Image (cartoon, rainbow, N blue to C red):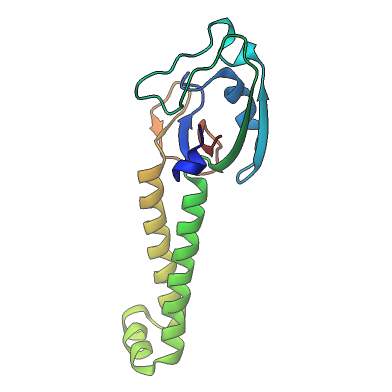
Length: 169
């Protein structure tokens, strides 16, 4: 099976039993964006039972008992970190374009200066707006974290968590 050939990555969450133990052990060792070959012994793959072709499964075919498997995988994202990084970069570009317009368009600069108290006030307003948009996007993409013995916390975007997205084949 190849998610690359299908043109869409295989998405999984580690620690939920959704993937073989070999992936549970191997994927966390990869860095974001890294492509690697995982060689998985039968003991941490499908073992003595193998795997039959299941309707609706992402793979195709049958894996025989005691099969050692090789996967060509690429870790495309972890808990939407890459997508959030790209979103932050787009917000930075947006703010830079607004400041460039401020610097080049006297009428626009006068209007924004009146509203925000000058260029620095306008820049601060853009930073605040960018930060709010980023936090809103992060809250949509990342589930709240639970602190031990406490209530759910807002995600910090910095942890690796358990989510993985990778292409296998």
